[in-house]
Length: 141
Image (cartoon, rainbow, N blue to C red):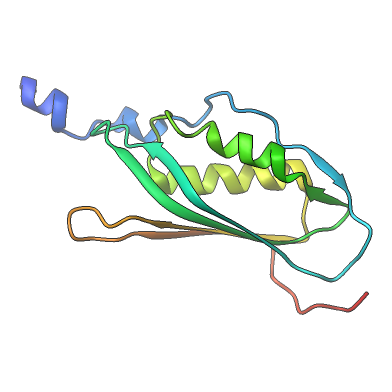
């Protein structure tokens, strides 16, 4: 099948799915957890990235919930990590899954869930949820 110039600009290409998959990002730092059996929820209401297909910005709200084990996320480094997506071409489905993977790698939580709720585009709104481990009931301190 011959591709036209229009296909190259507007059409989906399989390599777009890999966009941003291994782009370098600032490190996520951690600090030692002092307690057990509680949940942390971090909301980032200004997440932005760039659609690799259209090159238009994507906007969303990220909500990370996790139960720390030995480490907690250091928020300033996590903020700078998320800012690394600002000009990155990545589908938001992939961004949510990569962020969760990187959080798990850095903090090794008992469980974690990341929800990305993205701004309506073309009359459709997407909510992407990725999970690690099994959420448990709090066991007390």
